[in-house]
Image (tube, rainbow, N blue to C red; front, top):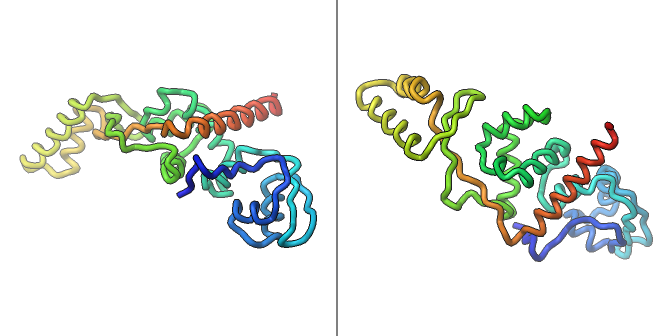
Length: 225
């Protein structure tokens, strides 16, 4: 697991010796490094030969994309435009942070950047893997879900719904029948999801990400304006 406090892989506009860039990218192939920089939209020149090659990074067309791949371990196939908008809402809208994945899926679709619930879970999993966020604080979001319809619930209502479900099972109803009764009574299936906590020791990292996200979105707005 990368330690973001000690290890900062953010690609910068400066010269990089071969050994440093090789370690950042996880490859010992100079041609592979060059091809990867080209694919990432990084303008650079090379001086010398391996192992004394110096890569002079001159321009990074999409710093957010490069950072996500190098530091946050997102795959190159990621839709970085959707990820940028998702991070924008996540880092700037306190209510957005506390919503369950199903509701986030609905909101992203309503905001014209549709992202599936599975993809959202993967976004969060990447951040959890490097300890930027945690869902171990013990606080939960309680709600009832039926397709795209979600209704907020208290912990007491959530618990009552499940007590009634198990009582229906003891009374001889099947699981499907008991869940149907829950849907009829409460408008959906009772669910809970751990509330996400931002790891406070990485606030500088969150600020860096937010700056890159805002710059990317502003550039897109300017280009389409």
